[in-house]
Image 1: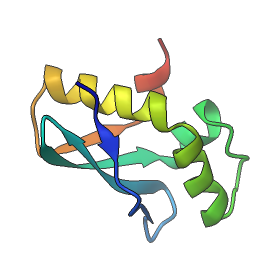
Image 2: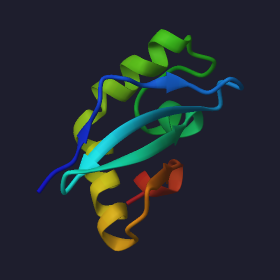
Image 3: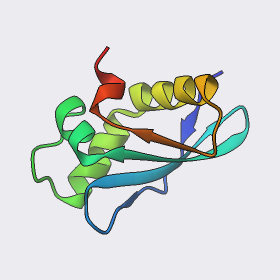
Image 4: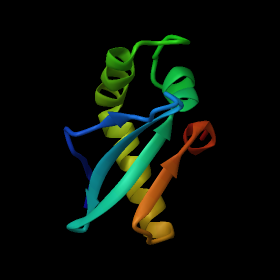
Length: 89
C-alpha cells in the first residue's frame, strides 16, 4: 500500500521546512520535510522561493511518499519528519 501527499502543503514561518499531510493505511499523518532535503535531494535551488519549494515537493512526490510510508510502518506515529538522511540510501 502506498501513501499519498495531500495538495495542501505549507511553508514554515522560518522557511526551514514544508509541512503536508500524507495518508498511509487510511490514517492521516502530519509530515514535514526540511528545506535542506528539498535542496539536496529534490532539485530545489539554494534559497528557492516558496513556490519552487512546493514544486520540488510535488516533483518528488513518488520518492517522498514512499519514504513517509516506510517510516510510518517502521515507527507508527501521528507525524513523520523527513531530512536529508532519510534519502541518503
